[in-house]
Amino acid sequence: RAMGISAVGTSIGGLVFPPLVASLIERFGWSRAFVLVSIGVALGLLPAILALAIDRPEDVGQRPDGAAAAGAAATLREGAVPRDPPLRVPEILRAARFWQITAVVAFAIGPYLALLANLVPFASDLGIPPTRAAVFLSTAALIAIPGKLLFGSLADRLGTRNALWLVVGFEAGALLA
Image (tube, rainbow, N blue to C red; front, top):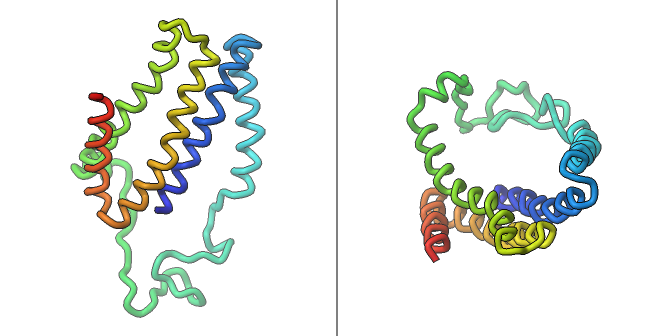
């Protein structure tokens, strides 16, 4: 559920940015528009990163999972399961499970991204102005919000694998339709 809620942020960005960027492009041209977007992103994100990014969880009173709150980070509470050390990038790249997850995510997200990438050009081919076509992207983002929240809830109830199968099935049906 937490992942579903946090994923809503991408939909909010998808709701706001396409019309904004389309109108900036129409008003200033694509080159200046992207300079303005870059400046806006830098001015908006840098303060947030500086304020919210945490290098050391201990600095804000957090501990590794299973660590005793009052003791050293390496001291585990009774009954806590110690974690394996994190994998290095070469180990991850050799892991079959990593490539399986990557393939599933690519096939689940790829068609949606292809649809988004081609929606405005398709609308333009139909004679719809780019600023109005950008609203289609915002609409897709708006519609995705309840889906993300529902997926998070389904993943908690059905398990991630079953929820993902359900989503892939719905996506395939929607694209076929």
